[in-house]
Figure 1 (cartoon, one colour):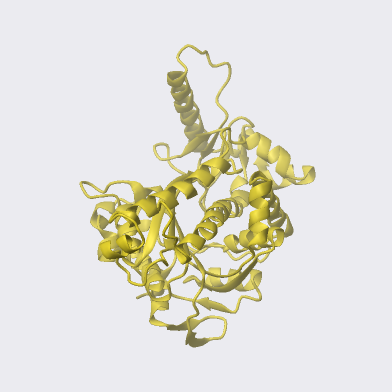
Figure 2 (cartoon, rainbow, N blue to C red):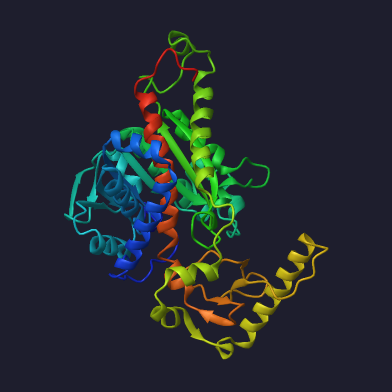
Length: 429
């Protein structure tokens, strides 16, 4: 398989050795502390009383900011997270990982090779044995299932057929999990994974079946970073898979259920309850009133950096085309708000951010938050009437904040794993 098919479907960003600078790492630590304090005293005490050493592996996970999140959690809770390996096809991204994780022992180059047991390691320059891990955090390419892909219909069953970049990289993730059986698997992909492709089922159904077949309880949720401390619209499908260690075989049999005093539908019941527990903790941490972009910038940036880092110009900064895109977005936003509040007269234009790098019919906009940021995004903040470099900072921060979602899912998964490892006949699962 060509290297390009084993990682991200977009061009690698320019290498920036200073990307996880002290300010960003401090941001991660502050956010972890924020969620930690929201757990409540009882949960925090229980968490600290059950310390673990968790071996973590990642694949196609971008900046691996999840590792910083987990280590920040470990510093607070007394847990240890050992970053065992990463896997990334892009040479630029591998170089970024080497620069920012200098003690990382292994960086593999192709997720589809991991299940073979031996794979090329870019750190040592040799083919080595692939180590097992407890927690596997993986992305798989979104291109085949993305709503932006005009050829999406061709990949209606990309997961089941292992076709397209999405199907090929997911198969690599699934095969690694089949062979090494990590206790917890967490994956992330675009919201298109939840949408039907023509008359076919949504791809997420096949993803869940694949994990279930190899012995995992599976759940998923659509989460938006706006509800997790970051004013950026970034809807992503998060998937968690928890290894069912209550049985030796990969398939649940009725006799197994009866042996433990359960009905033949025990596995489905346990899976629903596990998913409900994870969903409940995620809902607990979601902000009902997301922070606005203005408040975020005012509270998170040193005063001396605001003008320098975020402002590239005033009214003259936009071309005629870009100004037309902004005006059209403002009109659309006004129309939307007026439909939502027909009896309320708008006193001023909506506070929106527009990505003016796109054409008139395709330019995304969002009220009170940045749009989903891409490497070539050029954001314009209409309220301030200024083009901004928000993309520069938000490109580094969204994965940090989305990584916090991993923290939340991980927190529940590890507590529930105790049941999976030591099932009790008296449980109502």
